[in-house]
Length: 402
Image (cartoon, rainbow, N blue to C red; front, top):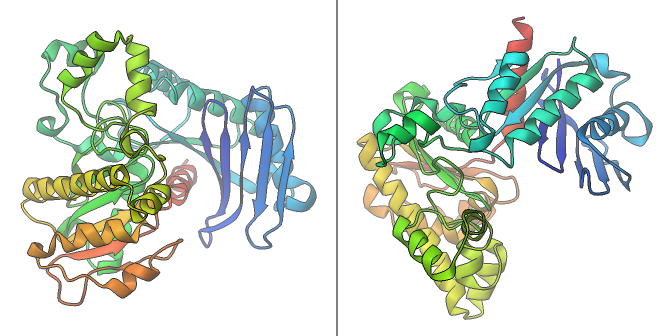
């Protein structure tokens, strides 16, 4: 079976066609600037043939038509027609507490996703557009499956997901921790168990998805018991442009001093804070590392803040799980930042972890590896994430059982 994996943003549509017989990516690409002009990129993985062009993309339906064209025509043709696609898998950011697993799309599912738009105003409306456009282009005979980014976190107990605000706001507005990056955390925790040759139900794993957006998750017996992101992706670790967790009084204090509206507050905390604001250099970890190496003190502070927070959350999750068997680094920074991994692991030596410097040097650009030395009490891995494959696996399973 071939599965088309879709990730729709408000002005973008990323796609990846995967042959599930060998779990091999056949082609991938992106439609960008939807509603604001339009740009299309597509690449055939086996041959490296790449197509790139500008065109008017007024909406997601037109973008899907271009995806169809890229896959079935011209230099990037990889299938004869859309009948070869057995299912379409959609990444959905916010499933709230309505969806704790991947589901087949029907009207009630679309309504459910729509009802959660207040919790993810930048994402869920775009996902709905993508689903409807996909159905319009591919027809109703192709199964459409939604895979929810926070579903993996639905096993958290109330003591982990509740906030210490009046309970009525949980009842009225569903204000609670939901967590994100769940598809990535699910994939790498499963891969970690496989690499260890053990059943995930017998393991305590801490997964660190570190990128421009970052989150850390405690996985005990294959079930999430806590994660750092909260109601929105703003909570937890300091990130590229996001503040991460701060004393709520900092926010109200600055609102009074600066006269921020709620929208301005959200913009500052989400887009003008984090590594960008502390370093004064960039939101990109590579730029900040380079600046720190040249002696930039603010860049050094930014790096030390992030590394400290990662160690702190790992430590808290060890306490929450009453131990840990493995720690995993993934995501753009987790998979590539050698200094970050070195700092974190060497400062966790008290756990009985030996650090393999040579593997740390080579575990970059899609190469994984074990960073702990033989005999370490806790094993540490770099595992490149593959959210698209996880989505495709769920889509295949549901489509085959219809």
